[in-house]
Length: 173
Image 1 (spheres, rainbow, N blue to C red):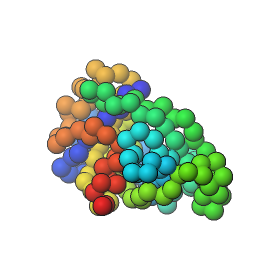
Image 2: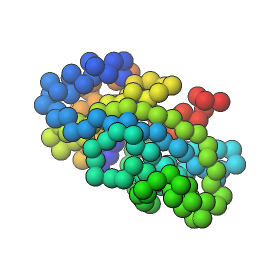
Image 3: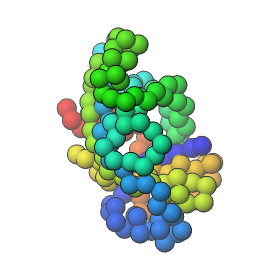
């Protein structure tokens, strides 16, 4: 899978376009991402932990999900590999796990978002209202050609070339 995130002008317009193209709404979700880093400068471009705390979702996951992934940004799009994914029943257990297994990692930033997941053929599309930032679309496709084709169908103002967590960290300074 290859994916890309881009800034959009309007959530309602983008959702309408996805549905017009035959996209099927799969989920409406809300969560908070709490980011942990061991980088002394809090640079989140290379490595970080993300504790996602769901307040609303219909996915078959627990409400507290810890992920560590390595993302490689290409000229067009990005490829992410999950190194760790662990689910927890509560925040206390998830924080204890981080402290025990990643003692050098400290809380860096947190931010929230609400989103809508669509399935369009074999592709996943996430339209999100990222609090204290901008509305976005994230497209996951099987290959670069399909990703480019889909991206052209939406009014994307610009694509992101670094992790959202890093952008949010800089914006909250």
